[in-house]
Structure formats: C-alpha cells, structure tokens
Length: 179
Image 1: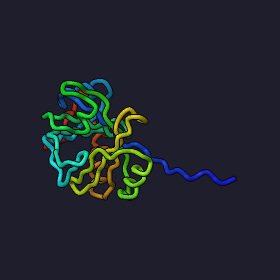
Image 2: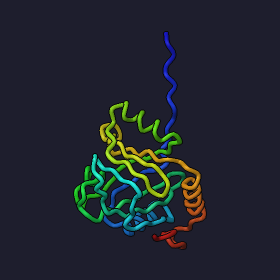
Image 3: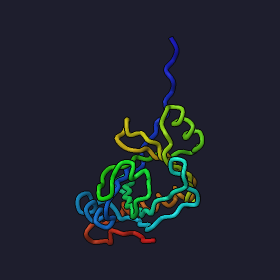
C-alpha cells in the first residue's frame, strides 16, 4: 500500500466581494461586524494585465480592511469592460466573488492549479506583486486568487492588520487611507 500524498495547507487570507458602492459596503461591514479600517484605492491600474487572453483591464476601485485575521476586500467596477467580476455579476448586482491565499513560489502554484484543470481567468502584476485568478466556481462558488508574498506587501498587510487591532468602530474613521 502506497502512502497518501502529502497535501500542503493553503490558508485563505482574504475574502472578496463585488459591491456597487465601496463607501456603503465599508459602512455596513463596520456597523455589522466592526471590520476596518479600510485602505481604499480608486481606479487602480496594474503594471501588466491579462484577462482571458486580452489586455482589457476594467476600471475598478478596491478597499482592503481586516475582520479578525481575515482581510476583507471590496471591489467596485465602474465600467462594463469584460472582467472576472462581470463573469459572475451583471452591472448592479453584487455579492461574494473570491477567496485568496498567499504563495511564495507563484509559478509553481500557478502550474499546479492549471494541472488540476482550473482555468486561469486573469493574471496581473501590480505594486511589485504577481496575482492570478482561477475559475474555481464549481468548487468554491467563486474565483480563487493566488497572490505573491514579497516582503513589502507582507509589511503592508501587517500595517493594515495592526490598524484593525487598534480600530474603534464608531469612534475612528473607517477609512485608513484613500489613494
């Protein structure tokens, strides 16, 4: 009898939602759960971008904040460019979109997911970090993002996590930073 293969744990660090209004989502999650504060980036642009074989990059804004140990991301798409967000939701719709986990060997994990039969829907490079979204809707009900873990991004995440630990909902500003 052969030994079962060793499976590496891949812990989610992020759960993401497509929303119609980032500020409204921040207010609702702050009031309901005490999430935040959130770092907001309006009209984010990447250095390199590929969506299903094209370089068509949708106009999106992001908000990132913590709820306990989990990063919560809100995405607002401002146009009708085909995207991984419009793959799941029409304009005006919103809801859960993806989970994400950090990877040290990005290319190896990208290849592993492809070898499992998952379709890479989007790949990008921004702020010195590789990221890719795989269509895992048949398993997770959404997409799965793999996200590189270089030291500078881990430092940014640590700052946001610490801000959450110190955050006083209803007293402190729910927006950590706007860019």
